Length: 323
Picture 1 (cartoon, helix red, strand yellow):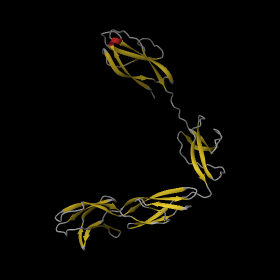
Picture 2 (picture 1 turned 90 degrees about the vertical axis):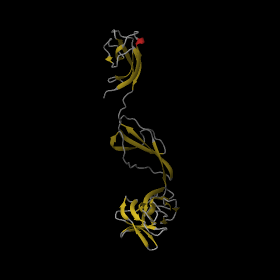
Picture 3 (picture 1 turned 30 degrees about the vertical axis):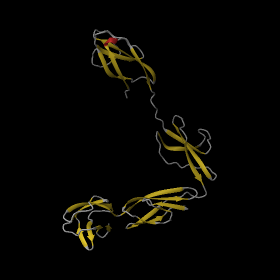
Picture 4 (picture 1 turned 120 degrees about the vertical axis):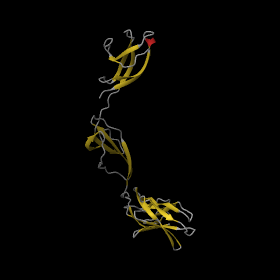
């Protein structure tokens, strides 16, 4: 791959010979090749020129170099050399991770930890390691890990604290069943002494197997946290409480036809929509589902009873959502 250096240049004719155009230029690195034998520059001739010069640095070693430039005027004369010091950075070498080591609490010295192998050496490694831990007293300890590349260099230490105790840490898990707007939660965790539930609507409890009545339809992230003296754990499950959240518009004259948008949770294709009041019904027509959370329906309010009506959404044989 070729390497280039871009330099911004501005030159005036007065720098060389007054009242003549600058018509050519050349550059070279480090060693004088002789006038006219450098690498030519391309620009539009004029009594002053301003341009960006792309300098080919291919083949130069890393380190400091001297860039020289000179310019020619229209009568064929060359001006004085201009110089600029540049630095070529060394190319980074691609290293592979080939080995790791770990120790607990006390630094044994680089290379003296408990070694473990890398299954497939590469410049980036992501895999699970099973580390055989030494016998440790109860309490908090710190695990240190570092890795070595194929050039023999060790990387920085990475540390993680852990607790040694007489029991297993907890493993949180639960399942859920839902009946209308009530969710029943079944704790299926292991090794817990205490639990805390966050129902996702601002309510919490420490009951082992709670139920919860949701005030509104919606999708809720329910979190269970389990505790024992060794450690705690948590898990989040999503629950959907079917129901109607809103209808827009929510009012109309009894002389109108309207297209209503109904938002909520649990909608599906082929649902039936109607408004009810004291035995009267207004059946929605042209009902269309826009996914699980929205549907539209047409209502004819001509000559209907004035007052508040309830909206009912039904999936025949499966679901009835009422508001």
